[in-house]
Picture 1 (cartoon, rainbow, N blue to C red):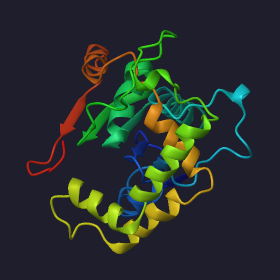
Picture 2 (cartoon, one colour; picture 1 turned 180 degrees about the horizontal axis):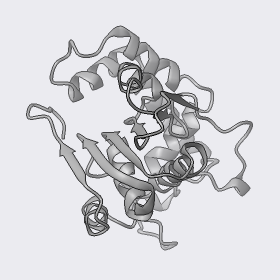
Picture 3 (cartoon, helix red, strand yellow; picture 1 turned 180 degrees about the vertical axis):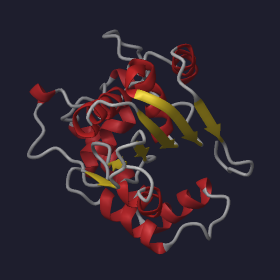
Length: 240
């Protein structure tokens, strides 16, 4: 699922990448304002918002909700939907992390990066090498379908964090000004998380492996490719 607005043919397009747990609904005000001067796109990452696989997920599909999957989705979106021309990308939180890795992989698709409170890391499991680390993550690598005990654990945890009190608490943990978000955003997040495949997606995310490349290394690659980067971190950001 994605949204696009604006029709400028003289300026490079803009792509707005959301953070974890939100989607295109997070950028409605920006989409409206920026489209006055630019052609603007925003997208839902697979397993969030309105972007979901259809039908039952099979082992043969090798679906894992990992950074690598989302980076591939961002690159494919720019190539197939935007049209392959260079884009200015704004990424918030997880969106900034993914934008950096995507730009490090395909710098030819990017005009610049604006990283707003970009998450400097994602995932807890070590990069997937095919070798067991002997720890918790050796039980499963996040590729669906999940083993029943792990799925039951992930589902129970997911029910807790997608409840209204938990969503409100988490938003207060990432917003310095708790007046900056409203009940509509809370409800949009809960609605997105209520998709029937949400349990599988969240469980996979919990156990998905890290990228082999670090955030710092990806930033270095973007810099070496000559792409300008604006790093924006709120002075009073309570999390990053």
